[in-house]
Image (tube, rainbow, N blue to C red; front, side, top):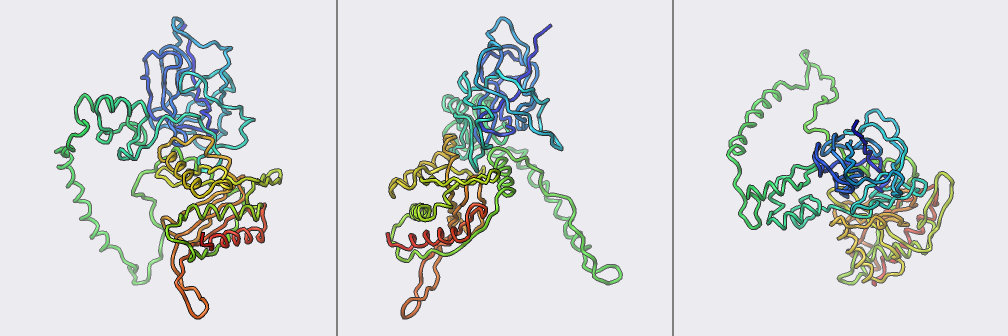
Length: 473
C-alpha cells in the first residue's frame, strides 16, 4: 500500500493564522524531491517559497491560486517514493505548526482539515529551516501595522519601476533572460501575480518582447466594447417611474436601499488582511484620547526638512515627558518607559500600511534622520524591509498631511502608548504686536492611551513639540 503523507501549512514565521496561495510551483501528479520549491505563499505581502517536506508524487493539492489556507490546515498530499531521499522523522527542524485557528462561522477558503499538534515539518527558502521560535517565545501576534514577526527572506516585491508588476524574483530573472517585458505579460496568478508559465508563454508567442511597440487591441475586444451601450437606455424609464408621492398624492415613506451591489466582494489579503485584524484588536484594547493644536513654523528657514523637524520635535517631547514614549501591558497593568526613542514611521502603500521602525532617533542628527527615513521608505517600496524593522518601536508618527487633512485621531497600536499625527500645513492670520501677520502652521494631533498617561502628560508632551517646532533651526 502506498505511503501517503499530508503536508499541513506550517507557521511561516509571521505569527499569522493563514496565508494565501500565489502559485503552485509543482503540478498535481508530478514528482517532487525533498526541499524542492513547492508553492509560493503570500503573508503580509511577502511571497515565500515553501519547499517540499517529502520526496514523491504530489497526489492532491488542497486549494488553488488565490485561496486562503489556515495555518495548520492540509496543504498537499504526497505518495512517498522510497527510492528518493526522505527526511528522517527524528530529524530536528526547528520548525513548528501553530495551533489550528479556533472554530469560526466559515472556514478559510481552501482550508483543509486542521493539523494535529506535531513537529518535523521543514519550510525554508533555501532547503533549510525557517527560523521560527516556539509560540511561547513570540509574545505578540505579528503584523505589518503593529509589531511584526515574519520570515527572514522576502521572495517577491512589487516593483514600481516596471509598472507595478507583481512577480517573484525567479520570474523576473527568467523574464530578463528570455528578453520578456513583464509589463506586457498578462498575469494569471492570484492578485495579478505574473507566474513562470506566463513568462514562458509570452516568450514562446513573442508578444512581450523588450522594446517592442504596444500591441493593438484584439478585434474581439473592440467589437465587444459597444455591447453594454444598450443598458443605460432603460435608466430614463426607471427614473421616470420614480416619484416622491404615493398613488394617493401623499409623501411616500422612505425605505432602505436594496441589497444589490455594483461590485463583487473581494477577500482581503496580505497587508490589508493583517491591518484589519490589528486595527480591530487595537480598537478593543486601547482607551484613546486625542489632543490637537497648531505648530507655528513662521520662523523656519527656507529649505527646512518638515519630516526631520517633526521627528526632532517628537524626540524632544519624549525626553521631556517620557510617559508617552512607553509600552503598556493592559492585562498586567504594567508600564515600561524607554530611555531611547525608536519611532514607527507610517508608510502608506497601495497594498496597505507599513510601519517600519526608525531606530535611535534620539541620537541621530538631521542628515542621519533623513538618510534613515529614505532607507526605510525604499525598503518598504521594494518589499525588502527586514522583519525586525517592522516591530519594537516605542512611539509612532504619521505625516498624513502630505496628502490632505488637518487633524486626526490615529490608532494607537499596543503596546505603544501614543502616536503623533501631522496634518497639511497652511497659512493663517496671526496677531502680532501692532497688527496681524500671515504665518505658516502645521496641525499636530497626539493620540494616547489614557490608561497609561494622563491628560496633563499628553498636553505637556504636545507643548514640548510645539515649542521645538517654533524654533528657527
